[in-house]
Image (cartoon, rainbow over all chains, first blue to last red; front, side, top):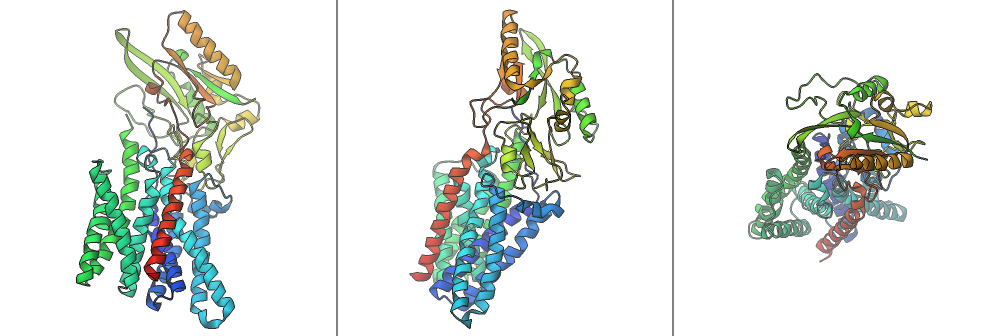
Length: 267
Length: 247
């Protein structure tokens, strides 16, 4: 039996998967809310979360490197064959666009050039943001560890939808519950719940306990609390917390699964 | 013509001179004085500080115990997962056909570690960079054979033109069969997504017993489907966001 090597990544990598994903979708929320003329508190919160994530993500990634001083070497080349290279460049463009969009937004009434700049930077931030929320699933899928490789199609969906629910929840917790954010969070929790039900129906064995718990939190529990929230508003905050914790937990669960996979192959 | 290794396990006597020569020449750090407690194989496996590993394969053959040795090494894949995964361009293909990690470029991101279908490359914890067999690139440049092939006392490790080595491996397998050793097989996975290796082997029994997978897979073959899934998910998320604000 071939013994495969376990991932050497420490906690920073799953933490980045979470933070980067939330920031990415938050930028998309900011873009959609701005274009649709949404309320200022939601837009401001989404922009702040996107910028916070754009600032923290590189720090997490750099501190996980074996040689942090060489982090700029990530930008020596651009390789489509390497999901990590694509991700590093996506993060750079995202950070720049998110920062520029915030500046344009604050200066927004200044005239047509600023307004156009806001739309362009917002669209760039939203596009790269959505890539940021999903590429990490592609990255894990394109490895040799069976637990990831076998799920190369579902991991990007899982990470993306999980980030969608978490980002809407984060914006809501900062800016207060709005109808739009509840709709987004409901959609994300509903998709997660459908995936959970499908895996139950297929009697798929759980990957590990962390992932099972994360799925329950971000899927059926968040969905139930959201539905309860339609009758009793405070349940929304609990649902938002469940989605956030579930989303974060799942990333740690997936890295843990890769490590266990490699360990199970050693004679 | 590309160079290659041919490791003829039927000639290996398990002396581990290749391991020692490799460590000496490449100045690979010691990786502990550890007894595995289950075999004379106290090296364990290939890793960040072991570029040659003599495997001790123990099993029952013809009614009695059989002890086979095989010196394992980086396969220097024709299409290498580590090379493709490397985001810095540190891992390159040399003019001799080897897969080489440039130590002055590697920033220790760790993506190559989970991209090797043979579990070869790893990150050295104290150093922070990834290491594996260099194919003795420095010796090759000087017109010398790799240290392991040079030191091997039984010519179990042979180095040279890959096509010539392939012919030699087939001839050796046939010669063994003529002598009654019918379970020797050549490991040369050319019809796989990695497109073959530059380290081929002749082993007795099943290749799997030597950690040589029948169908090693290049991880990037799943990229297209992965990205398609990511694009679909992104589109779905954009639609959900648009609907949430506009409905």
